[in-house]
Length: 291
Image 1 (cartoon, one colour):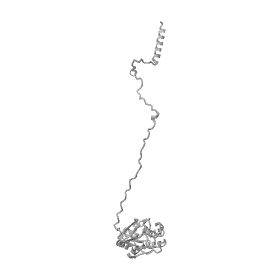
Image 2 (spheres, rainbow, N blue to C red; image 1 turned 90 degrees about the vertical axis):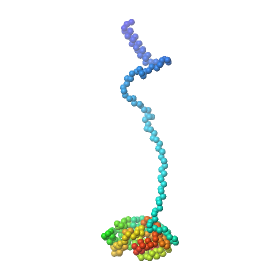
Image 3 (cartoon, helix red, strand yellow; image 1 turned 135 degrees about the vertical axis):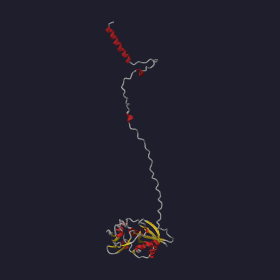
């Protein structure tokens, strides 16, 4: 055999052997599986294999369901009753009361107007504080002050409301109004028989109350008696004043007490006749009787 022929046979045999090696070989049922993984050498690079995720695995996780409880506000505690003022009394036996409506004053210094409003409403004449105050022609000029924080000269409360009704009575930027203006407004608003003045006897007031007639009086706030002074009005009148000037309306009477409708707090209470007479005297027993 020639060398070329031998070479051809060798190449042909190698090709056929390669073909046979590439063809699927059905293992003999009794032959053990060849440990391929142990006999083949690792020929790849030392690179970590990234795992490709299926699209369904890339979806955002579902937001957990939150459970809400219905809000129930805590119970509101019942406030304790306000302590009685030291000057307030319980009514004594045999008392007379008048159904006077109770109003709190609408403006800082309009206690006289609010007391007037209660007196008118007792007889079915209903007005707001602001509607009645419009008839008081306020004189808003500032006072002339003297030594020791005293007022030397200011307006005339017998003719107009003095100062700013939203002001402060101690500064002072506002003050109040006296009985002639209150009587005039009562006459023009359904009470032509109302009358007022100074120097009333306590018995006159008690008799009016017993007959069903409420009485507006001028006192000091909370029945205190800090200090009284006198100024000269622009028109020359001498005006007795207090930095805590106040007006209330009496709505009842007993043997030893009177009942008070106080616009400052919007409260109603009883006080002794002796305290009433003492404090009322500081404003020369000024009053307006509604009838």
